[in-house]
Image 1 (cartoon, one colour):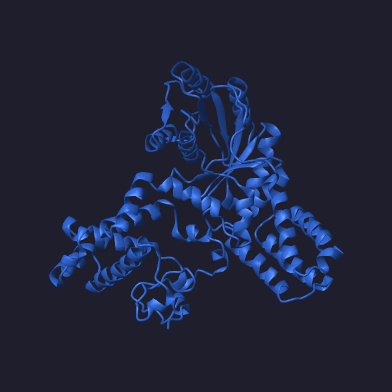
Image 2: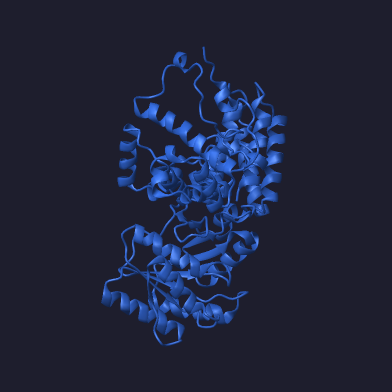
Length: 472
């Protein structure tokens, strides 16, 4: 989402890095680029003006201008002020709430409230809670059935009474939670294409009846400043405790995220970063800012890995590596684990330094290529996956036909797998050998462009990252 904004801001910093001493002209040039980047990202113009003024006041300080690392000082100032835009409130739900806690989801039609209800239910289950969902949207066709389908996919209970009166449905869910031990009630409310008095009256009636501890406004990040205006109106007339930004993985320009706290006056509680029901995250401003400035987000990467990796499987894999028993079956499992962590490009963007790389064209991670690799391995028999040495010419032809690929692709996969297995064996035996012992050793091909992936069917250039290693 922040890709374009991040690139522009980092380019502005690049112009400062070659200077031994900064002048006011250098700072103004960088600030002009940052101002244009923020305005093009659809950040509220009043927010941009206040932000630039604060950065200028701090950057023009003589201690910064005379510093031995002036560019680093300016980057720190910009980082601090970006964090200030998001406020100091923590993401998530309020700390103190009665049991059962009631969470009311508000928003316009099409913003993603029903899907967010399911995502929030999954998130609460990961916290050890027992949520119950209910829909009070009796006007939109199939809205109630949609929540039931989402609840089934998320394995979250849904309260479905016969009454079609919104307030009665909400109060009935609250009574059901008290009777059956649910500790959280998620109320998916109705939306409109625009704000009207009937909608606000209905929401106020539900709020008075169930007394929610959390009123979350669900905003589509793709709508930019329109979402902020609507959030402000909902906050004025009903009251909002936090914002959920959906579709953060899209190509929106990011202005809504940077403007919402300053304009609406409420914190961002959660962000939706994908289509899966697991793709709802607590909002961490420091991590978002680190990604924007190309510093990576290792903490989020670790959290995603912990959710995707099974501890028992990890221990079994470690044991296999020690015994040199790593198979194609294990390789396929690791590919599936990586895919469970989310889009590959988003995972790479969390690595420090990767945010500075332009992953375009041949260097852009190819999700389809990973799918083809899985298809090739899945087309093998169980015996072939356990022992790739038995895969002769006729078997390779059969595997290529079964996976819809070519024999060349099967050969390439087997060759790369064996080279990777050789390196893993050395690591399992206590690390890579000394450099002087590496003469003549063929190392596995690595992605070109500092982390990108080669396009399928194209030859890799000689050298690459492994070419940096000099052997004697």
